[in-house]
Each structure stands twice: as structure tokens, then as C-alpha cells.
Image (cartoon, rainbow, N blue to C red; front, side):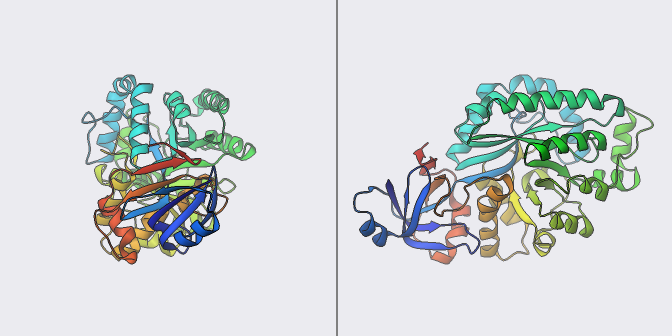
Length: 408
């Protein structure tokens, strides 16, 4: 057993309890959390790790939505408009895929680890990131994605998806969990989505999907008009929306689902997500770079929807660090009281994300995996300011543990 001490322990539980002069006793799982002097007296034979001055212990961060297969992109893709970006993705997809080797993706996962990300939801469109994710030190929920809007291709697309899912299941472990992703309402035929969701239900897989990301998607789904009409007509002059937004949401009513983006979601759609006890994943930097608008975080909170945070991928971001993402979110939502928003964001990348992904971590409490990080603040600060100051000043961790084992 090991006892680690710090000036502050952020449990990231529902009440966002912060323990000053705290300590945590752990092995592979957390045994006890409390005051430093009390735990030292109670466990005199435990190995002790004393952290530096102004240190903070908190759960390892969880990136609920990240695409790793486009990790080679730096300046090749175009930003500012969703359709312009999408066209550039199609244009450069093969080139970027060739550059995104297992070694490159592995290096990005190591960078994420140094930034404090100990778990992630990896959205895999092609399976090209499988080896890197299996080898990753982090806990990975691996979302095998299905998409395809042409009815005649449903069987082929389903077969490809099922093959990738079965391959990923060969590596299933406590740190690698196969899952299912349905791409979006504009790109996945309902028959194909239903087949994939039935598999997810039978195999108890968590599900991820993109939903109402852009004004183009909103116009297309609602009216069959807008930029997507022009986009799809290049492939099929008779293209039309596959289903309404509410019909799409209805497909997921039995699944444990993370809906990503929802920037253009209407009140009724947010209520449906809430009624399904589903999760919404916010990707603020991606939303800004693709010009899709800003998530109504007040409406999400009012609907009592579980909120998580994701970096999306380097196809629509310049960083996979959740600290960078949280800093961006602080600036993107100026109507929210700063300290309150900081706590909300930290819970979105810890306890909320663990709940959404079905992981026994994200909270520092007895019985959870010992996935935690130690960070240091540049100066002393008040207890009430710890969450905000962490987000403002943290770039890399001082220590990172997964399953009680030191990673970096």
C-alpha cells in the first residue's frame, strides 16, 4: 500500500469536495482518502510519497471524444466553415491516413499521457489506430464507427463495421474496451444504424454519435436544403435526408450513448437526450475552428444532461490536451461564473466522463481504479480557487498513475 500526500485533493465527486492537506491510500484501487495526518497515523507502515509544495491530486483526465486517425494533420486541412473543412478532409484523407502511422499515433497518446489524460474514447473510422490504442498505457474505450447512407451499400458497410468490431474484441481487457459509434444522422442510413445499435445493445457496448454539429446539418435534416444539399448532389442528385432529428435520437433510446457536439440542437432534442439519460460531449475548439457555432451550455445544464469534454481530433484542433480544451471553454462561455465553470469543466473530464464511458475511475473514492494525477501550482492559492487556477496554469503533470502504477 502507498500513501500519497498533497496540499489539495480534488475528489471530483458530485459535491466537488476538496480536501486540504490531504492524502490517499492506494494500490491498484483506491483504499482510502482523507486528511494527511489522520491517514499517516492510521497506516504507519504504508510507503509514503510526499509531493512538492502547492501540489494537487485529482483523478486522471478522461477525453470522451477523440479521433486519432487524422493525427498527422497540422496545416493541410481548411477551417472556418464545416463544408469547406469536410471537402478538404475528403481531398487529403488518403495522404493523412498514410502519414498517421502506429508510431505517430502512439506518440500522440504519450503526449496526452504527459498532459494527464489517463482514459479516452477513441472514435475509429477505419481501424487504423487499433494497434496504437491496444498498446496505449491509457484506458481506451474504442468506438468502432459505422457510416454509409446508400441503401444498396448497407450490407457491405455493416460487414466492414462488424469485422472491425470483432477484431477489436480480440484485445478486450480492463484497459481496452470495444464500443460502437454511429457517425451521424446525415451520413448513416437508419437501417445501418439500427443494426449496429442492436449489436451494441446485445454486447453491452457504450455508443457514441455526432449530432447536430453544424448549421449545414440542421438545414439538411430539417428541410433537405443548404450546403449539404449542394454537397450530396455531387454524389447523388436525388439525395434527401435519411430521417428527422427526433427520429434519429429515437434510434438510441435503449443504448448508453454519448451525443457529440449538439451545437445546433433544439430544446426538444436536448430534452430527448436528457430523457434517455444520455451524455453530451462538448468540443469547443473544434466547434470554433469549423465555424459551427457555440454550444448553449446553459440549456444543457438546465436540461440536466451529463456533460463531458472532448478534443475531437487534430483534424479540427491543434492540441489533444484537455487542459488546452478547458482553457478554451473558459473563454468561450463568458456568461458563466468563472469559478463555477472551472469546477463544471473538471467534472466533465473526470467523474462525468467516467460515468458516460462506464469506467470505474474519475472520482477519488474507495474502490475506484487508482487512475490519478499530481499537478503543481506556481504559487499558493485559496481552496476555492484551486479548480480555476489548475485550468489556467497546468500543461503537464508532475506524476501520473494508472492502476496504481506510475506512468510518468
